[in-house]
Amino acid sequence: MGKVHDYLKKVNKVFAAACAVSLFISSHALAGIVESGELTEPSFWILNNNAGDSVVLDEEGIKQFNRKICDVSLDVTEMKSIPDPFPVKEFLPWISNTWAMRGTVYCKGRELTEAEKDAIQSNLNLAALPSESETVAVRYGVTVRHAVVRNLPLAAGLFEEPDDVYYDNVQDSVLEAGEPVAILHESTDKKYYYVRMYNLFGWIAQEDIALCTREQWLQYVDPQDFLVVTGRDFYTRVNGEDVFHLMGARLRCLQEKKKRWQVLLPYKDRKTGLLQEKTMWLAKEEGLHRGYLPYTSDEVIRRAFKFYGSVYGWGGAMRSVDCSSLVGSVYRTMGLELPRNTSKLVKVPGVVTDFTDKNREERLQAIATLKPGSPLSMKGHIMIYLGTEKGEPYVIHSSSSYYKDGRKIYVRRVLVSDLEMDRKNGKSFLENLINGVTYQ
Image 1: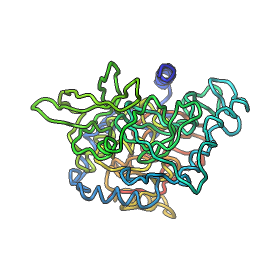
Image 2: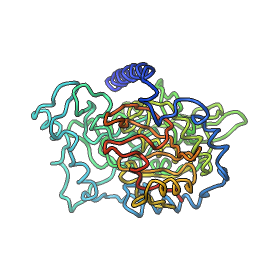
Image 3: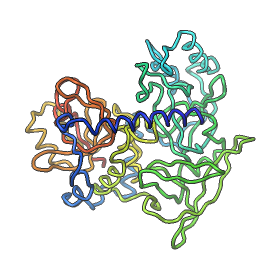
Image 4: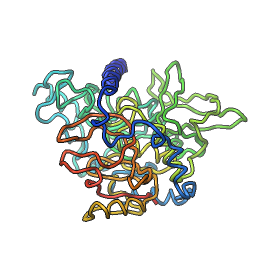
């Protein structure tokens, strides 16, 4: 964990420097981004959101929505239904995909050698897997801290440029403490488990997972009573460690008093590697909610603004969010289990507004009919629609960059903007929209 913390410190220093430089960028360079004023306040959009407090889906409706997501091949699965033994053919294409180290890539500023690539390939331990037509026995585990999910069993980042610290090819996602995982395989060096989680396959460091029985595991798959982190993040302290929980994380709840909750927190026995649990009292505060929040468009807006100004976190790095994990974290506070990646999010069922083959005016008219809080998708990026002001639609999103006069401008933060910024193809965000979806 020390290496990870050093890396995070380095990235945060770079981000702080970038923010300082951004203060000197002209307002013209930031055209389309709202830097201050009422449009950057959730209260403005909520005040102008008619029927924003109406429930979009109730508890049963959300369960049906989640089942529908699992049925349409968007990489989301119902964890309690995971087969044991598990078919190798279902994860072999994932585990054998080594795109992250193809071509010229850099590690710690130095080009990765072919010998180093061979060593990484060997650490996949693919020879230990049975044939594609066979199965593997499932072991059960629970994450004990905010864990990074990698597409290779590798802690170090691999980058396209030698001086890059933001866009690590190996970084796929993160998983919160207290999440159930199905363990399918382990690396040659026995430092990583290959797991199935609710919306992804990936490698997680063994130190971040405690082994448990299936019976224990099911308590985390479907907890009967729990708190949801509804603020940007929350910390607990377990066995001398400050455990970070991002929005959407669940904490198992044992009982409630007038001013506090008693929760059950997982940790890993250092000698046996097995799951242990600790009870703790937490003071009631705004950033926690017993059970899921009601799914309303106002609530989507409130949660999204909790991330306003946060650093852009590629694949959930830097304890923050990228565009898709912003959407996922926000909607998870209401119980919706969404795909991890934009390529799948654009296919999520619901009330879909299709923007293909529409001209500018038709797109503006179609957007104005959307329920605020609905995600807007274009290739490789997703945003949350806030509403329309003076004929202009506005969104909140975790943005890496945009283009101005053919020049790429990095912003790397969660921000509010209109849809007039350009993409690499020279067309505006508005012109690049594929669809908008209200999840229901």
